Length: 189
Image 1 (cartoon, helix red, strand yellow):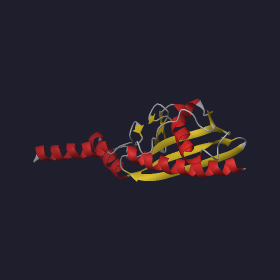
Image 2: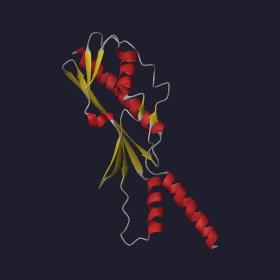
Image 3: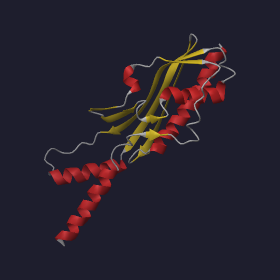
Image 4: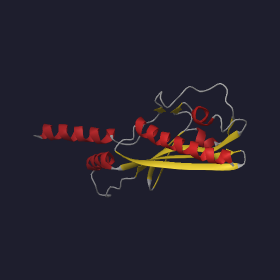
């Protein structure tokens, strides 16, 4: 009986820990990651802060935030946006400069609070189980200028359990489509 309990406990802990967190890298589906054009009808200037160009993990009282940078998104952000705009707004952006000032992709994994007197094994099991059922939030923010006209969009989505590549990809795709519409508006002014 004791062996059965240990096996079941180990299986639950393994299952719980596998549900923690989010994917480390995001390689976008070839349908989304279209070919990067050598030439475009517009100029794309990448003016993002250095902190948005590299991945990071930070923690706080709200939980852990994993931020995806150019090193963990394939293709990197400037290439992805360039291809997206080339395919959807080439005519509207002809001869214009698009300055990318913000493009952030992050996942918030909420903190799980365990009572201070909880036994270590129990605390690990509770954290694993809670993580399986907790809602993680994927955030995407895109901002900048077309000429002097600003554009900015943000999109977020909640996912239960471990955040997978396709969750990040789906949220990123919606944000890019929203950015196209706001950039179209900015380019028309």
